[in-house]
Image 1 (cartoon, rainbow, N blue to C red):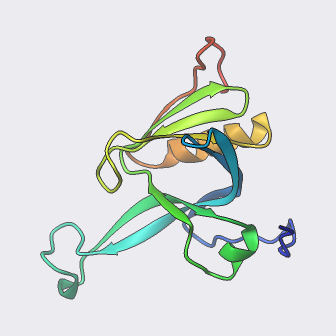
Image 2: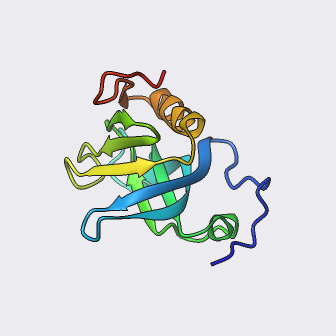
Length: 149
């Protein structure tokens, strides 16, 4: 499907570390599914030190939002997938491919997602952005010993 969003339009505002196309491996079908992704900060009610949302406590965490097309993100629609990055482990595999393994804090524990950027530079950008997120570990060394850094 043709996406009506122009390439120069940005989705995220302040709190967005990275955005752009990413493909995610559908492990059941063994196919890559194209998405438009935004790595952004999310607020959650009932944060640290509070027992309920009414107390006004907020927690902040970064998440990867996966949209079918960029225009869905621009409209402020719900992402097709929301993958929290809290305490995630990110690992460069090779070429443009890297993995993100969820910690289980806010996702299914230990689920590994295979992701692929369009270019090596974009893959480097995603790993650099994820490395900024507190608690995320990034391994820049690929399975063949090469480094993306």
